[in-house]
Image 1 (cartoon, helix red, strand yellow):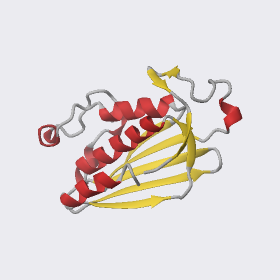
Image 2 (cartoon, helix red, strand yellow):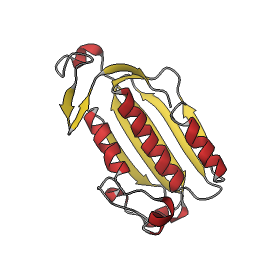
Image 3 (cartoon, rainbow, N blue to C red):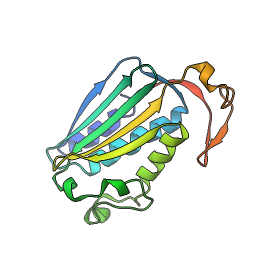
Image 4 (spheres, rainbow, N blue to C red):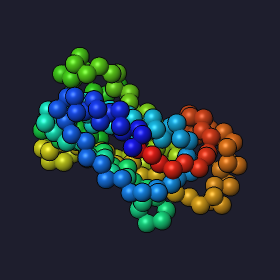
Length: 173
């Protein structure tokens, strides 16, 4: 809720709604600042590419006992014609008409993918058939003993070009 709160105000000021479905007590082993950055990138994009009067849906849940899933969707009527497979390409702008209006350089979702992959997770984008897009991030919830082969907790390691420190994190969106 902490990562989403400031953006909900922005959404409301732009006549857009935010709906949250956050499962309580979801925890992962991750770099907290990077996970917050990931959530920020996704909510920012969802708001930018949401129709006026539309809804941004944010959900966070545990999938079985081994992973969590963060889902971010928005209402975007023009989303049907967008090639979701290119969302994570650097400098790709799905809607060039919005480039001047909303700013940005088209690197946010590329960074989001790097963060997810650095945490041994994945991120996917799907078109919701004329209703908008859905971004789905899956992150593993390894047991502490599963991480021993990577590094000791709180010891930085290099993954996909990013320096990370593993710490226990309660996901707070």
